[in-house]
Image (tube, rainbow, N blue to C red; front, side, top):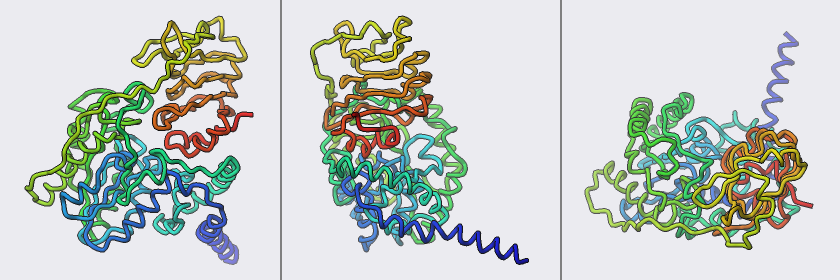
Length: 475
């Protein structure tokens, strides 16, 4: 019996360490993310809790942050609006958890997760969560205590990365991926007139609309969440995010109907959107397959308002002017047409220039490879998946002309440990385009060396922050 009591006491202590230690430990860490994109969640959370009357709460990933004009929604519905959408990598569950405490009687919650496996799962990212909580650490009270252990375990890496970032200079971004890019409603209002993607869509983040995306554990969590929302006297509706038509892995109406029907069957709430209305032309997008430009926001907002009004049985006219799709902005500079090193590689011609697909046998034994700027008079702008498979290269030099790195770009090259990435900020301070799995199949010890002036920009960048552990300052 004595051993059992001791074991129980030890278990209680182990479980209590994260609960007691996490807030204390986190409070002692210096602030470095206060002006970044993730810090906007603190302002959204404040607005969520400051509204006394009935409100519409928009929840989702960055597609919601980049996709709604809350002021127009407020004008059209007569209800206050708060946009809680921020970042899919934070996790749908974490965003919903951070929202729940601010839901009150009479509220309408509209949830539109991105159409990918991560958003339709219980996925969370402890590092990104800690960075998000920094601007308002009291939000940790909205994270279930059972998940604090994971945050506590992530603290050492969080502290290390915070110190590195602080040493390189606390970032104060001013582009679309900054706290200042959001208005008082929580909408991202940074001016986005064009589609700035080199291929007009992100080739590394294609959209698969298929029943296999739906995770049953997440559906169970969501249905429990819906019950709690209704117990508060609020309503919960499900809809779809804006999706770039070019990014669809297959243009299958039957697949989309199957997904819609599966969600109708599984979810204990009404689906208010028509999935077809949310598949939009590339001219409505900005820098990802889910991020709308200024024209796209007008289209998506009008669709959303129509769906909301139907639920409110409001038959009044919608007074939102939909702007036409915008043209593309060329993010490539003409340069000097330097074709040095071009004979070492194999290519495929794509819309914006040449993409590197492989290395010629004559160059596979080289210790160092440098990518060319041009080939046959056209820009080299992309590295395709597996471009360096079977090479003996140890050091890879990538110039400013490379604006797209596909997922798995470095896979199958076991000797590659150093990638010197010369980063040039493109249109609207955009960095080279990357997907969620750039490092898939790469050497575990690989390092991406970037200019000191760009390091701080990259580790807080919306797309690049997930690769912070691989980034180092070039010597």
